[in-house]
Amino acid sequence: MIDIFLIPLILAMLLVVIHAWFGQGILQRGIIFTDLAIAQFAALGSAVSLGYFHQEYMYLLTFSFALGAALFIALASFRTVNLEAFIGLIYVLGASGILMVLAHSAEGMEHFKSLLANDILFTTSKQLIEASLLYGGIGLVLWKIYPKTKGFIRELLFFSLLALTVTSSVQLAGVLVVFILLIAPVLVASMQSRFPSFLFAVGFGWSVCVIALAVAFYADLPTGYTIVSIGAFTAIGSVLALSKKREIRGPDSGSHF
Image 1: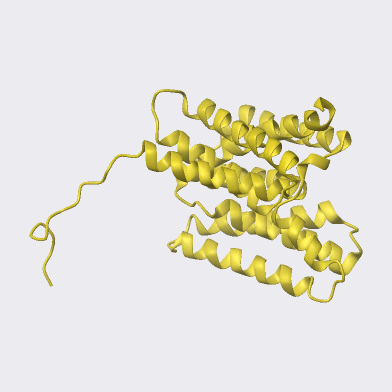
Image 2 (image 1 turned 180 degrees about the horizontal axis):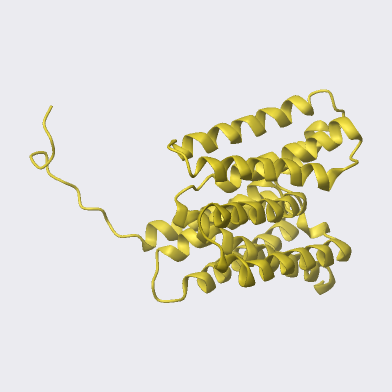
């Protein structure tokens, strides 16, 4: 039994750690759907590889599309625009592009489902090693180089590394799983002050993955969608439980029309 869960559990820990770091940066910038837009464009690159190149150049196209979206967002963050609306347009473009590219593909809908949420229970040892090396390299850059940068270069490096991370994680886990692991753990962690935020986010995210893997296996459910559902449900409940009530103003305290 341990042989079945060992690789997915290690992969889940890697995904949670790297995405929790980027999730903190996204939350601090207040651009929550950045990761979803970049992940959607990464998925579009994967769809283009399937639809037009018979799955050749998969990684190159996936990264190129993800990096393109990241560059657009990095440029927009230094301009006077409604950034959330701009990111929403990128997301819609990516989502509609996937459906258009896969419209005439016999495997289109199955590929689309796997792009949204993949089954990490079937991750191979080779995929795990490749992901470990990639995320280790990204972590080294974040530790040694990223703190020395500033301004546009800092933002460009952040979004480029995020695009590289998402390129791998979308293929391994799917767009929706990436979004959950980026946002849910850090959002819940931000609601408490008893424990270090990053460590709390990692613990929360990994707990969700462990529970979801067990539920998916024993209930014969899709692993990716189970992680998304349990992660979203747990985060919603935790945020409501940990957050404070907002003071409601009386009818005479506000402005009058």
